[in-house]
Length: 582
Image (cartoon, rainbow, N blue to C red; front, side):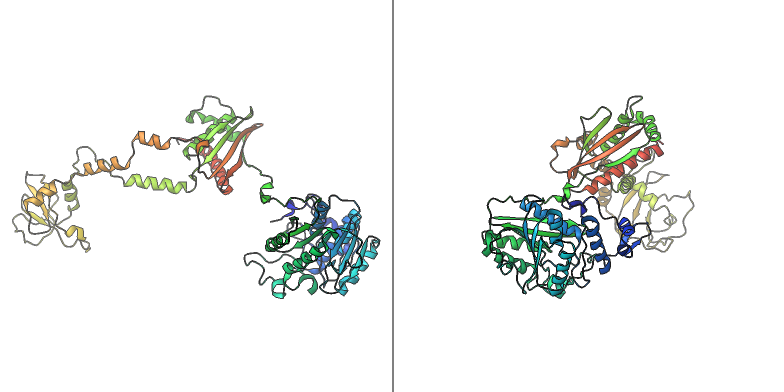
């Protein structure tokens, strides 16, 4: 995700990123590193040190009139990030364009901070450097841009920060100091082995910094603590002390260190550019300085919130108007009223709480409070409801007995029936014809069906059910045990009939109409305490068409609002494709 929208407001690249195609057409040295992708867009490979260097030199030349040389084996700065730092220093010292004095600790080969500050604002700089190669390049860059009267580059011993650099400048009070410290403590940390979260993607650009530029004992945390230690001795020699940080986790312990030392004025900020974020810390011992406010924690919420929108063209609107009477709309409703009525019907079906709110003459607004996600898996729910209804016992057709006896008799209609002259222990023979019915005696259930499957254990249990003989008044007893007592027969005949069981099930599972009305009675949207999200739906006419906009208000997840918007749109289109009642 690009962070350009969160750049400093005065950063020239905030709303106008570099045009690689234009720069390539103007600068041949830059053109050789630009290639065109399949979409026809000019691209740059930030993994190549030569390409990164060409971009930095080209931007400084094009936008600031600066000409610099940078060796590939030293740190190549990115211009938007350095420009963010310059603009923040302007905020600290209270303005731009005024003569100010600053210190750049470890200026690097490019000497970019002093060059930008001097060329943009006319600031005076003391630039320190410990590396011989960086010192030589920085000196030449200052000279070839004719800024030697504003920038002084000095070579200092290793581990020198502020104290030794200011020995010869004892009478001068500086307005600020800047520092881009070494971020890493060792080679492994510089490669991201110990410091980079495994879930983060690898860096998108190459790191060309020398050892003294990217690594220091203890990393950036200890390096900045040494600057804090120097500031405690220098105090009011500088109005503002500042440092850039490469890791957000370094910010809290450094602020705690300043608090312990009793530093009165402390602030911090974020530098956002491209896909990179940096942080900066500043402190002062002056009581009269103005402290800029830290960045808001709700930075992401500052983005413009565009509503979700879909259009209903004139043919679709006319078809919905022709069917509006089916949902209770008056004859010849206006397009906006028609679409609003259809939306209200859909929201009612979804059990979404809504109410109309005041709006313009040619539009309608609905305030929605969504308590439950009722629009996903709708097809599966309809299937389950249909299956549930099919599984409910149904009332039998009139004139057909549904007693357990008849059901059992039908179940055993394929049972082999012995001749009535045979005894009870007679082995079953072939089934009689369809018209032959035994007049008396008992029938013993087979231990196997004709297909060879075994009879279930439930069927093998003792079960004596009286079955009315169609020819006589005698009862035919279906038995599976040799002994039957009168008590058993009475107990079986006392069982509830299938119709009684069915009535009991329906009474228990199907709520009455009054209960259903009580359950479905909607609450007022304002009275709901727990909800998924709230949004505002605007329906307005756009010439012959109708636009529907859904604005986020508050809630847990905007994805749910996206789903609801898609559901409402698809529902309206389905009504047009398949009118109600067809």
